[in-house]
Amino acid sequence: MNKFLVALAVIALVNAGGVVEEQLASLSVGQQCSNPINAYAVTEFDVTPFPPTKGSTVVSKSVGTFNQAETITAIKVQVLLNGRNFYSETIPESGTFTAGQVGTFTYTQAVPSIAPKGAYTIQGGLINSNKQQISCWELNLDSWANSFFLWRRYDLKLIYKKKFRKAI
Image (tube, rainbow, N blue to C red; front, side):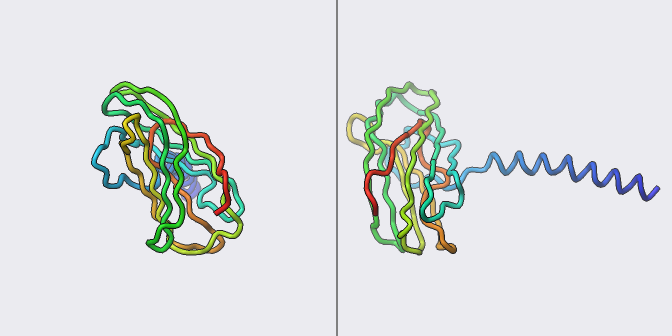
């Protein structure tokens, strides 16, 4: 009888593990931040590897749905360190999207090995052809040993692919 109960418990744990893994896989990092125009709703944001570490190359992927027709011209990234402006970049991007269309963006960035420790806030958004920011996604990262900033799940549902062009 005891062997049967143990076997049953093991089977239950194995099956529960799959459910937990599935739930963890569907989690996104970050949250929507305040923006006057929210024409792109982020549904998924991933950063690999997570957490980011100094000297690593990080890939951020955002998936979302456009609420209205938009022509995208850029991705804007702003980084705050301990509440102060630390870094800002506008990356050229292009694409025309209709209302209801899903967009995916992938962005690649090298994390400098000399990045200072601290509390990082990373904000990102899409810029349209009228030079308006139409979305905002924010990730807050407190300092952890040997880690650096970077968005785990970023704002936008399109694919950004861009190399970090200059060291911080």
